[in-house]
Image (cartoon, rainbow, N blue to C red; front, side, top):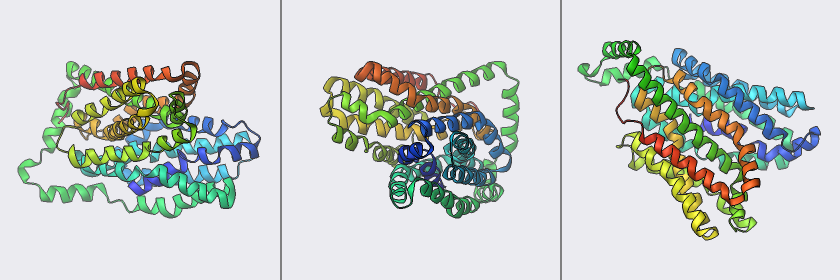
Length: 394
């Protein structure tokens, strides 16, 4: 699943940066057309997220993830044959369907469907492998584009989805088989299916508990959305921000390239050292990383740029894991996919708006935009501190 996530991200999130100039020129469209198209895809993905999550809850992750490969392939084939604005829009509509059924949120739900509350380690492992998506996506896409043009690289990734991604997802096991094997290895006394069902029903008719669930859900949705806005904004504009802090152009791009490896470092830290902690505790530590990094950069400017990128990347890497682990730890495995779709909807809207809004703020405020990222980072930390480590559901 980690390899399949690399393919999905490489062919969607990291492709526009490689082909935007050539494709826009060939289609006689503005340079930002492909980035705008990807924003449309993110909006579609946000709207369809709860539906995709509910599908995973009902039928398992394998058919939904396999469907995503078909949508991604249709999108890339259409993009490769695009002749103007409307075919470009159609391509990104298919892309939105692929994003809704094939990225982290659905993959997390698929793992929870397979392993229940024991999915934390596999969620971390999945994000650890997928952390190499930017390296693979940009490296492979640049190489293929140089040899076969921008249309060729679209068709290449469509072929990869059909010949590699689709078979990888088809190899996923049946949820009932995994649950049966887990049941065979557990003591009989540790199996409480009836208790779980009863507890869910009690919660459903308890207004006070229901209000608590809603409040925690709103706080989590805000955490994911605020972090997604800062993360996507910096992904698109980090080199320019560092230049505003006095870093030379070439060095700014070099330092910015360490965001991806830093996220992998964060995930390794979570995997090897934080597995014994409640995920809310590790997420609070991760949320503190960006405010500390922003404060250091504002005080010391350019000389501390690498430390800023390192701290931001480590924190963001763990916070991405938290998108899967926190809802599982707090709400439990029942209805995980559907709930995950709703929790991530504001985050996807934030990601869609971030490239434009963050760029506009950077143009108007310059390096003072760090005050905005600092405030958002602190608000995320406060929201996490307002959530109890006690699970709301068994």
